[in-house]
Each structure stands twice: as structure tokens, then as C-alpha cells.
Image (tube, rainbow, N blue to C red; front, side, top):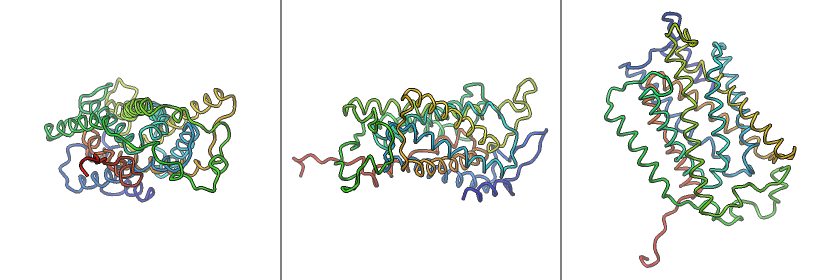
Length: 352
């Protein structure tokens, strides 16, 4: 799927044209129904992959999550290198690495959030805050990027308002994380520590918290992660906004979003490696390494990178101010509710 998506991006009608030396696609404001269809299809794929890429965290012991996030980021770099080769290695913009640094910082909270409040609720909360951060920065031109207009601003505002309302409601959702018997999660005859291939202490700092404190910390970390995720695409939007400015260091930059994925992923891996190195030093060279987290970590990184390529394609046709409200955490919520049974409806006994 990855190669097919990228190969399609190099062909008609996704082929680029050259205007004033800038690489560009037929972008914003297009009334072409076909182009809109491409945008919605790409964004739909991004929704599914973004909502599912952290599912492996639920079934695999990851400890404090530091090793998992490093493997995850390594996978992201590898996949982006393949994408960069397919795109014929466009010009590298170091500024885009700042977005990767923001994303990698947010990814540090993934495992603690999932352990504290669950996959469905965690992704929904950070998805809401990420959506609002990305929408506000795109719609009103924050952080030096060009403000984007939409054909029907009232509907756009309504979508953002519903996102804010749903985000507030999520804080009152109760989950069953940590309440299930251990036997539901682990085979009876397999030693958890030996089977996970762990080196160093296996208990996470989240595991020793009380239920109320764990919930508060999980919600707070989810909001912080969402803000960082939403801000991670701002450097790319900034570069594109100043591509035609003769006085800017970004002058002549490509307007094709996919040209910046590799630089962003380099920032992700570099920042993740720095964090993991600091973690190893802090642990006195006894980091918590889980061998069973390697393959799920690579799978998670693969799904995230595919989703990002698809989302950037959608941006070219629908613009970020439209795609941010579309990319929601519905898929993650379905995983949490239907598969992992994190949210259940309680019926008072007197009503039975």
C-alpha cells in the first residue's frame, strides 16, 4: 500500500507542475470533484491508520514506554527513507525537523497514557487537543504561517466547536483500565517477565499510582501530547507559507507536502534517540528493554508513517484547516470500546 500510494502521488492527476521554480500541486480552492475525492480517500486512510497505530501497546508489555517509543521512531525513519527514495530525494529542509522533535516529545507520553486511561480514551483526548491546535494555527495563522480560508466557515467553526465539546465530555468518561483480572491479559503458564524479554526493573511508574491520580495524570499527559502532535506540522506549514517570500530563508521551497516527510522523520528519530540516551544514563545503563515490543513497535511506526503520507496528500487537496477537523479518533474509540472493552455501560441494580 505504501509504494502504491507514493507512486500514485507521482502520476496524473497528482503530478506536480512547476511555477516560479516551486514544486506544487493543484491545491487549495479547487472545485475539481476528482481532486476532492482523492483528498477524502487519502484522509480516510489516514484516519484508520492513525486510530490503529498504537493498538500493539495494549497487548504487549512495554514497561515505561521508553524502549517502545525508540523502536517506533526507528521504524518511522526507515519507512520515510524508502519514501524519500521514491520521491527522488527532494531538498532537505532542517526546519521541518523541529516538527519531528515536537512529535517525538509527545510520543514519550503514549505508553503512560494508554496504561493510565486506555487506548480509546487516550487517543480521543490527544486527538481532540491535536485537532484544535492544528486547526487554530492553520485557520488564524499562528506561529507565522499564512491563515487559510474555507468556503463555508460556519460549518468549519461548528466542527471545531463540536471537537472542543467532545473533548470536554471525554474527561468524564470512566474506563476499565487496570480493573481487569491479570488472568485476562496473560496466559496462566507463561512467566510474564521471562516471556517479555525484559532487562532491568519491569514495573512502570504508572503502575504504582492510585486510580484517581493515574486518571488525572493520564488525561493531562494526553492533552500535552495532543498539543505537541498538533504543533508538529506547523514548521512545514511555515516553510510553505514563506516559499514565495524573497526575504525568507524558505524562499523557493516546495509546496508539495510529501517533500518534507523525510526531514520531519529525521527530527523524530534524532530527538527520540537523544531522549533514550538520557534515559539510559538516568537508569545507570540498566534500561527496561522488552524484546517482544520490537516487532509491534516497528508495526506501529509503519502505520503512523503511512498515515502521515496519506494525510499530507489530503492536505494538498483539502488544506490543513479542513483535514485537521476530519482526522478524528473515531477508530481508536471503536478499538477501545468494542475490542478492549475499556468503556462499559453500568446499569444501577435498582433498575434491574
